[in-house]
Amino acid sequence: MGLPEIGPVQQAIGTHVAELIPDGATIQIGFGAIPDAVVMQLTDRKDLGVHTEMIGDGILTLVEAGVVTNRLKTAFPGKSVATFALGSERLYRWMHRNRGLEMHPVDVTNDPYLAGSNDLLHTINATIEVDLAGQCCSESMGYVPYSGTGGQSDFVRAANRSRGGKSFIVTPSTAKGGTVSRIVPTLKPGAHVSTSRNDVSHVVTEHGAAHLRGKTNAERPRRSSRSPTRPSASSWGSRPRRCTSSDPPMPPQPPLPRS
Image 1 (cartoon, rainbow, N blue to C red):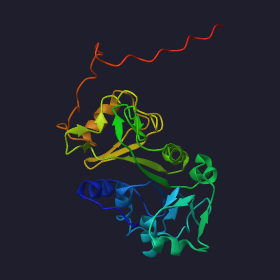
Image 2 (cartoon, rainbow, N blue to C red):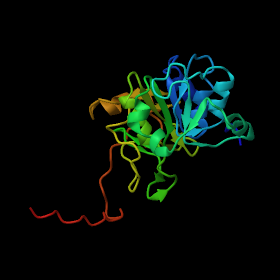
Image 3 (cartoon, rainbow, N blue to C red):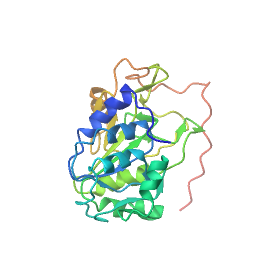
Image 4 (cartoon, rainbow, N blue to C red):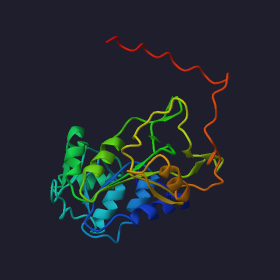
């Protein structure tokens, strides 16, 4: 297993994110073609550091290009830090007894305080669906589970703590050949909110990046419509519909505790 196939949409998203990552940044890369597309466009950077949950062939590419030095890291200086690896045999050979790499338990690598103590921490993670408030669903398609929780919310919060840090939630603007929008007025019923609207910073699609952190409810849709999606995308710009008798019933709510 090596780098995933990267198409034009992933390439465009990678370009938008890479433009916002400076020399000397410490990076965290999630799993998938889009985060790897970002990595492949960082080969002209200098003195990057690595503090991530998963280490893969994309990061190995940067190491071999001399881009990753970990020289400027403010936490675990001189070391790439991860908790697990997924990649090719070449990756595992590079890892073997590598004194420039430290593998730690997940409660160390994903601790937002520890990760966020790195200056210029830039984190890149993929999602399935984002609503106009900025809530990200990365674990389900409605009620149907799709993925595990992972470290997305940990590293988004770590980037928010980091001096000069940024977090990027990345997704294609549409699915199913452009017929379904991934940027929606509200998340689907039953969708798991992986990263909250209060934590999300940048949402990036192939059409651009929208900076949502600290923005009001009125500002967020305007920023989203200018950057992450096309107005013609299915369901974009539609108003949230009223519930009808054909909708599934809401689950019963527990009674409020008596004072």
